[in-house]
Image 1 (cartoon, rainbow, N blue to C red):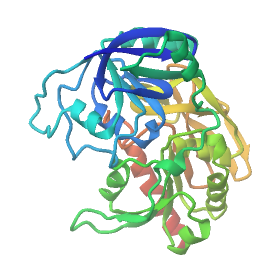
Image 2 (tube, rainbow, N blue to C red):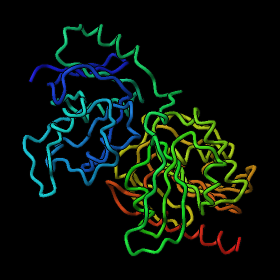
Image 3 (cartoon, rainbow, N blue to C red):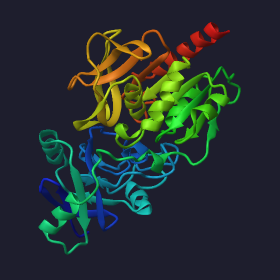
Image 4 (tube, rainbow, N blue to C red):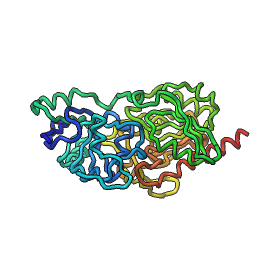
Length: 375
């Protein structure tokens, strides 16, 4: 191992040791508060162009496997840990975390105080980060390179992560197909269409750029808008597509990036959060039931909707359905007179708690009512 350096764009500097690949990495600095689920984090396309800091100090002890991957590759721009496990101990493990990072060409750093970095980001807000190992650059030269790297605000990244061809995820063998859903892939996780398929839904996953007419041509019972990376303010084409489905009263469900896009389709702006919500332990209040749900998050933007009371849109009256208890951010939207809703977190719960799994059942309920109405 050699020295490695972590540099933030405000000039903050940490020294650690090289880990995984040697070289340079640049991206938005984000922290994940989950003690588990690092494999799902690494393979989640929503982390494209981001350097992930794991707040839990010990990472990698359960290794990696092919079954839990959320996509076919690792997407993070860099990976920051305090103490990577020197050995793997889990019956499901097929290879080590470091070997997976090496194969993917991911630059990492170990031996830094990840909680101190996290506290700094919570105080100062989101910023760009660089990791440097095997380098002769001076500290000022590193800072200059970090400040020259791309920012997340204004970034259009969904085209990098979307599927190239549409594909179908069918219900398990012997399960009746109850509904057919068109899922727009902006960075979808494998667990999401799988969760729908377990409820008797045949999911056709479409690439970004697919027209509303093509999707409607398959006569879907519902539209799903996935999670994904980048700034929702860049997604005008998808916003217009969603408005077409809302006008036709086709049941619509969005999560994370899809929640922000639905919010824009309803007429709201989106904004950059100071440091985002990431991890598998985020408390959210369901305003309809009063229940507190522990949920899995990965987002750096939010919808500027009123957190109390109803609001009017071009598609009828709507309301905020969920809020984050940490900071009051709007976490869910729904239309009252039309079948559309969204949440800014991951009901597929991979990895994470299962408190939000009922949202897929709610989507099924909306599609059932729509079928009866249109029969």
